[in-house]
Amino acid sequence: MIIRDILNLKGNAIFNIAPDSRVADAVSVMVQNDIGSLVVMADGKMAGMLTFREVLKGLDAKRGNLGELPVSEVMVRDPVTCTPEDTSETLREVMTQQHVRYVPVMDGANLLGVISFHDIAKAAIKEASFENRLLKRYIKNWPEGEEPAAGR
Image (cartoon, rainbow, N blue to C red; front, side):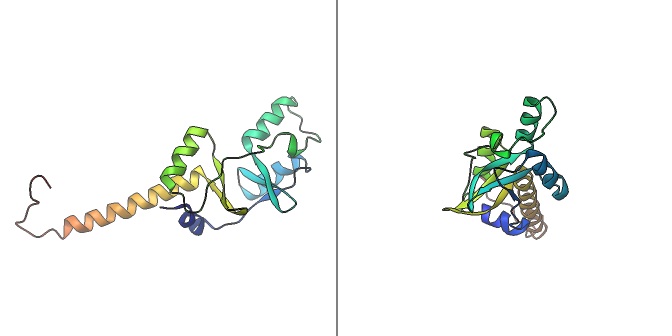
């Protein structure tokens, strides 16, 4: 399955925040929308990513008090990205190796959406379920008395 298909299934809503916004405000947006990341946008372009991991780092650095901490101080400035034509398998490997849970999908300079590890897992389950149904249908309709040739 390619990333474009996953975006089509999940929708391409993009939740964002400005780099000069407070991290506390970002947390509110994330909680209200039940999401784990925000795209940081400046002048209509992606400037970085903010995930709950960066929020926790900010909390730790400020000893539990986010106060006026700006998003720009804790965001990931150069996040891992993918294209709509990448495969879910490739992205799953990248996400695992790079230890990231949220990846912006870029088509050139255009931000199309954000894929989460959860989105990748759902797509894998859906794909496996589809293949499973096809195999069951194939086995159910196997002609009686015929067996597959050995070595094929």
